[in-house]
Amino acid sequence: MSEPLVSVLMAARNHERFAEEAARSVLDQDYERLELIAVDDASDDGTPEVLEQCLAEAPPGRMRVVRHDRQEGIAETRAHALHLAQGELIGVLDSDDLWLPGKVGPQVELLAEQPQAGLVHAAFEAFDSESGAPVPWTPQWDHEADPLVELVRVGCFVMTGTVLIRRAAIDRRGVGFMNPGYASYDDYLLYLTIALDWELAYEDRLVMRYRRHAGNLTNVLFAQNLARARANLLELFVGMFPEAKPRLGGELRRTMASQLVRAAVQERARSNFRALRWTLSAFRQHPPTALRASADAVRERAAAIGAR
Image 1: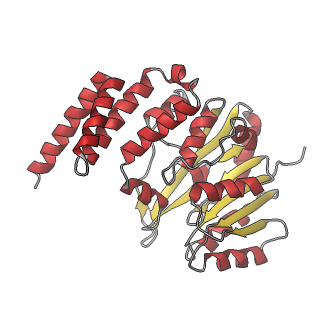
Image 2: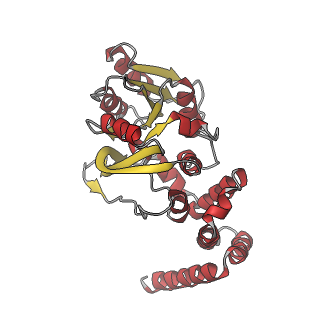
């Protein structure tokens, strides 16, 4: 039996300094049936030229480069790359991150051995782009629990640059990489959707280096009201797939309550009305959790004032 084709989606924008290293970390993988599809989202630096040079030096059929005439966003760029992909298995790597050698083959084997798994994700290391120093970044979740419940309770513990995903798992619900209104949450929505029907496999093997720098898309998300963004995403998800509610049970209500209280605390400086409305919504979701979250917020605020 021949090896399955692996299509690697690379969304690129204004990563002239990083794109060559990122692309080569994919092209140099020791897995033969692999294609890299790099889509430049209307960069205004030299990123397209860097990718074109990588294309010129890559073996025939190993890489494809596409350029947007105008900026469309990370979700739309990944969706475009996915549309072009021919592979049965899908990898994802942004143009500022790195795959480590030997990333692909063992993940292909793992998915072959576990047909019930819709994707495999793995360990990674974060590092500071300027100094090269490690950056603490280790997601924590219950490996034995229902992954759908954990994605709601913990948040997106799957590091996208580590994944290998079955195309069938992406296509089953027809969601793909969809813009949920918040940068970097298209992948979170996809993993929630995949977890409805598939298991999420994990290998405790280092496969990726996650570059931290001022231009990270996650910084854009973190600069917003992150708790409100997460609550909105969960509302969107269960609105699209109400059959998830019984499986999530009380965890959905508890998570919504805690996130809405946190969102209200952050929003208070901008709008007391919205903050009050979100707090009341939290108490409607799950009063005990909302009460604990409110008490925690009061204690944190008091501690911050005392530290001044």
